[in-house]
Image (cartoon, rainbow, N blue to C red):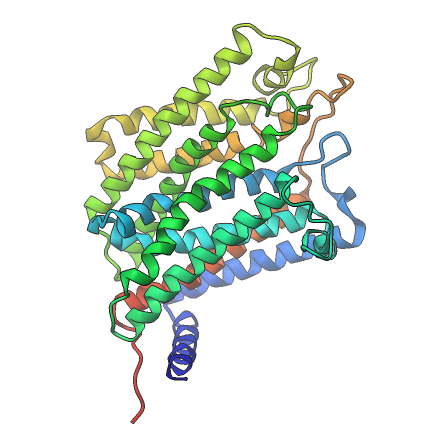
Length: 407
């Protein structure tokens, strides 16, 4: 019963914390709320008129929604790069950032689920994925594996930080015997969520662009580059606008993770390009469409030829120790890398898999204003959730939120 009282007090104190702040904080939350309302309005139109209001067709049936879903799975998995050093290897330099990383993972996973719901047309069809009610088709369907690993990883990233913050809220140290087993499990689970997502594409033999043995490893490499890059940018904002001071050596260690992962990702990209263009077959047409256009169709050229130079430039700059330790250059490189991988794992991966179609027909895809509005709304929702989680966690870690026993 006392635990319930403490938890109730934590919820009340958290609500008081997230509803107070500076003018800048209220403007930020107000802007996110406005964008979420715009997204909800666009989504209401999609619910009313169906997926015909999107740019997707029976030829290109996955677009902006699934592109963002695929990318955000990697952002969520990247939390493991902070969890493992902190909870498993006991590296104190990562301790300041791990709760922020896990909060980012929770926000990314909620966005993943929202993008899946948006892509399915509406929440009314979700009953198909409920075991025992719908046709779950486990373990034959890779989609059911994806549902299980994503929800399982969300559970781990909610419960472990919640337990630690709950103990700190009471002024007590968290017991490692309680959270370390879950942390170790989350390390393997994080790898699993991205590999299963990659296997979901690899298992479609009729789509040769995805039928690539490097897809799974490259998913992991790109995730461990883009995710920590985003964490660095978030930590930079937090330490500049809050009292929560992240040490320079923490950012430098995360930057090293980003650099190594970006280098591996670039090597794998070169390997894929060699395979597609050195001895091309008719299975290389999707790659040709992506990089050079096909039969006069070239909608994705501006996207991919923006992503590749940004990827190469950021990776090369990060490789040099002196440049990487300059925080201004580090932040710019992390931003470039984040945008580049978002494009590569988004439009650069999903859309070309459908082009050309089974009979050689090329139907290009361009997202509509409705899709863009829903997408912006979901990203705003993720930022809103993360801001709430981070503000509460920072308040507890700084000692401003503490349980007060009533006499």
